Image (cartoon, rainbow, N blue to C red; front, top):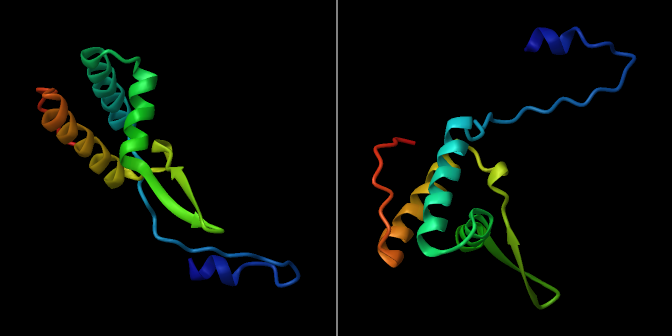
Amino acid sequence: MITKIRDLDDNQLWKVVISKHKSMRSLDQNEYYWELITQLANDIGHTKDEMHQLMTFKFLTTKKIVNGEKIFTIKSTSKLNSKEFTEYIDNIKSWAKEYVGFNFGDNYEN
């Protein structure tokens, strides 16, 4: 990497950004998530899109105060890294079992 930086043209302006790599959720995780959301939605009488919105609101909402007013933001699941997405799925499964009595009954290891 240092060699590449040394080889940059001194007559040009450059912006170099180095940040820690975060692995984004996998396609398998995404497929698994939508299977869970669909099963849960069917069990309690919602569409999968409604269930997705409900779960993101429940587990990915943060509150900010802007000029004295509460503002809620919901993080997109597509912005979650692999670890965050696993935690999100685990939260949904725990909530579904505890509050809805729904057990996904699978052997999936995230």
